[in-house]
Amino acid sequence: MSLVLRPRADDKRWTAVRSSAPVFVLPSGWHVDPDGTARASLRCAGTRGGTAKVTVTAKAPDVAGAPAVAFTLDVNVVPYPREG
Image (cartoon, rainbow, N blue to C red; front, side, top):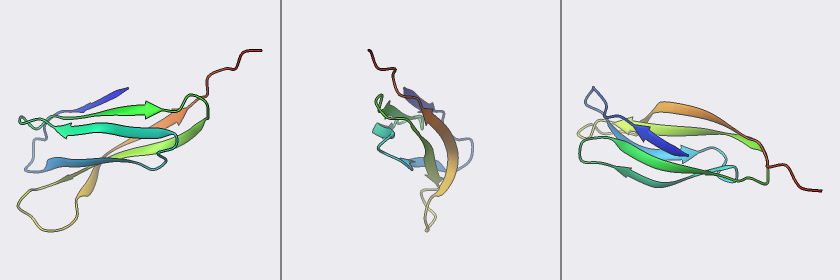
């Protein structure tokens, strides 16, 4: 699954993507394009089920302090059915 975030309309920029449970949902390939669009791939384990919150943070580049959560995605992973 791909996560694509459009450029922000305010002065903040996308900074990072994180998963609350990397064993179920693992973000990879995070990058921000020159136009401000952010992209990441979300890989889900197909053998175990569970839930994870995927959060993306944003921050103004010229302001000190930690980035704030700007986007949250709740993901439910359902395991593949096993054969016989």
